[in-house]
Image 1 (cartoon, one colour):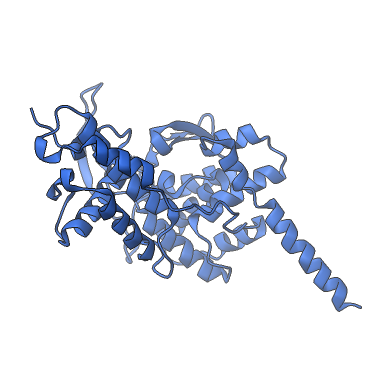
Image 2: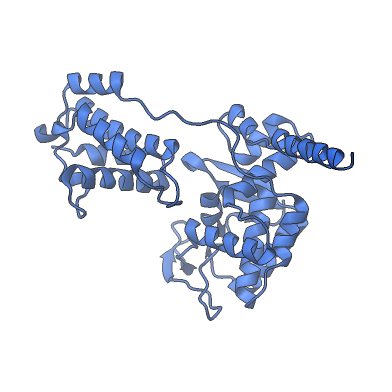
Length: 336
């Protein structure tokens, strides 16, 4: 039976989130190849994909605006992900004997791509901003408006700053299974669908409880969109429990990562602070743990990093110390 290399590649990924991300990346490549905005990854004859075309595509991506920040170019990390999806499909098309002949890629093409296609150089210098605890409190206290939205936004801010979650991890939180009240833990589904437990302190628990009072107790995504009329926007579905056979209702429409970013932007604007991004809250969580002299391995486990080197790059203490030193120097010279 003939198999499509795209299906083989996507089915081999370890999470639904990865399949969705790589599927979109392949779809964008198909649109570039075919010059058709309706094209999909199945519109391409993968046997015809060769190195010069992929290099043209790489150059196209390097000139393209970021989908998240239209005022800047697409990041090297994102481009690397897009190229990785292409490599993955081509590898499957060459190595799997069940691939149909029209998609079979030769060893020569695979070898040439492996030898000559390079990911863009990733800038590993320190990025992001540290949010001081006082600044965080100012942002939370500035929240005003309708009751449900304020309670939800307070819970989102407290989890991001007090638990150091990635934005995608926060939107994936599910109630009640991801909240362990007894041990004061959030059960997180991280990258690669790996689970980890992250402790909550009292303010985080209180914020979640307050949000649940307004959200309601129906199982499903913890955070949901809210309308201008302050109504929780949800789709309700009946789902059968595979163990008990019991049919129960669940919410099925979580807030998006874009929705979280918009929430933070509004909160910062109201507080009169800099405009912080969701990942700045994660960086601040890690940096604060370093300030508290938490050991590196513990921090790495809490935030779900594969490598301790990655965790070290999130440490903004030196950056802040440098700024404070220069400011102190400026104040000293001013008084002379």
